[in-house]
Image 1 (cartoon, one colour):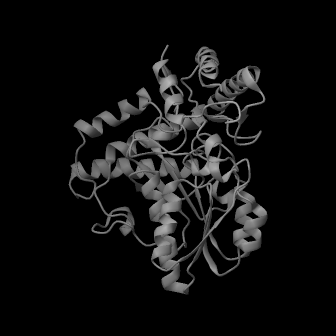
Image 2 (tube, rainbow, N blue to C red):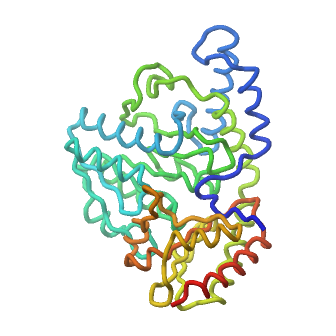
Length: 384
């Protein structure tokens, strides 16, 4: 059996999305900045997509900026808000957490080299932010707070509305990386009082290479990519028309199927956890807390009982037809323990035994049962 349980990394392209994209790959090839009919055709498609995505999160179309994905969107928002706010008010402090995606952490560290003061606060054992620490450190000298909505490695959910109330009280702009939540749970940027939000198409059965940044009107923002007047002079470069059209179609599908998909993956995760606990409830730990997003299941094999080797474990699963991940990027061919798992309180040896399974609407209970059978064999192979 072939099982794909790495949907937090990317998802399969939905057939309806592909069908919507095809005309813009073959027939409608005009540059959206051109004034002739070819250009007008693609310009209309982009603006319709912008309206679809804006409506989905209760934003205005003019607050949506298309990017090449979540990573660019995070860079764009964090640098764009921080630098502009510094030019306008001289505030140069940024606060974020140790549980962020590297596209947030590395952007903040790059700004630190440029003279910005970056505070990276601790997370708890479920990988959520420590709200008490945020509250104790945050004041009106900070221009930006950036906290992930749902952790991409553990599925833990941060209390975004509570954080926004706190940042608003200190006149600090707030950004959330919503790559793992967008299209999976309802998001209303006005209800949550978010100033900036970023998301990516390929996490919700859309094409790779396209994402967006929502930036509330009135929020200071400068471009990351220069050299063109596209996206209202905020993001230079000819738009990825087919990708944007596909993204909008994936949003329409997500809107229709969100509740059904959520309940489906919740059943998969619940059965998976039951199976894991029946195999070893003492030395395999479930990460992310009890109310983690059901699309993600992170488990850690404790080194007291297991000879942990992330690469060998993932290869064992792969040989048996199961695609999963350790939740961290592969660097120079070596799988490094996740910074999120380490900052959640695990040591290096335990972190090396952490595996992330992530679910999609296409997955089945039969796949869960098969994976549990393989994990049972893996337990015997890696047990000390």
